[in-house]
Length: 287
Length: 232
Image (cartoon, rainbow over all chains, first blue to last red; front, side):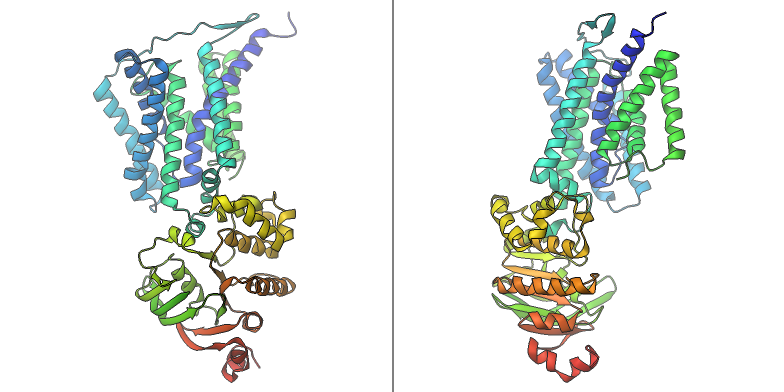
């Protein structure tokens, strides 16, 4: 028997790749919560809209893939702004439960609207990248691309939040909203910009997911809960916490799936989540 | 430079100010003194447009502030150091200063040097989270942040509140220096004895009304003030 199991290593590395993608997906939700203090429960449905955009522009209208993806990012950013202006802003000072319910309503609205518009069948982008071989291990190229883009997205956001005036204002507003006008900052404007960035991140996530998964109206339900739980696990609103939680969660899914069966990965990951809520309900990193 | 004419204001179901009139001329340092709950903070919040008056008019450099939204007041030249300092605790000292210069980014480097010149302690701690500073240092940072906008008028809300007695002394020394630098300052304070030593003129506000005004030295010697507020 070998001392070192190459398939375990493959599972760990695949978990790492998945972690990068989950990290990006949770980033937008975390940003919105951290700044606006509202949870976009319908975040994964925005991702679904982005996936349909890429699919239709590329497959139906024969746009080049990159152009379709760029359009999807812009469109979901616009959706994010619309969500903020028409749904969030009216309930900004309402009870958190009401904010949660109204974005929950948007979740089912988008799902039902997608069913109406696009039907229930699974749609495949039809782009397949050859697997990348490394010795005995094999990795999906789509996952590698997704990982690279996710890391770039995370780093880009980090630099923006830390080096620019607007980014600093976005961090500042999450610490003291009421004092912002004294700095000459219009909080409403910062919220709109933050919503656009959150939407753009969902759009980027959509581009990466559509390379690996078929799109259908209920696809949000397969990612939404995971994204939300990762944010909670890391500490809602804490970006660093979200990143750490994404990689931890992904390892549970990937390595857990390796030891048992792939379905077990999720069972173990969610059991870990429940256990953590007893041990550390505020998440890894408290905001 | 700044004038309030018969200004009244309040919050839901409660009137805080009744027909207040006051004036601050360019280069002056003026204090509004009075006990807790007299309406001093409300007065500054009015000038910054954080709340709207229910009656009366506020003019800055001859122009009414009536239609100016709160976030546009800074670029008119009014900087407000709010009650309890209100720094961004998890931003560094320098990032807090950067927020102060949000509307005038080009002057950031130059003004930062001025602020660090005024408060060398802030430069030593520039990469530290503002929440980890001592009370006195936080007050320096809050004043520095306000100065970053290059204000024509500086509003200070109770700069001595919540600070240890020894620190209070140094804060008033600081206020004196800022006035001496030529900034126009409107300061509200409960610490009447100390603030009257550093400003030129003062208004006494009690229960939402201006009840006395004049040169700081005259107010200091006024029998009523000595009896009611200084406990002499």
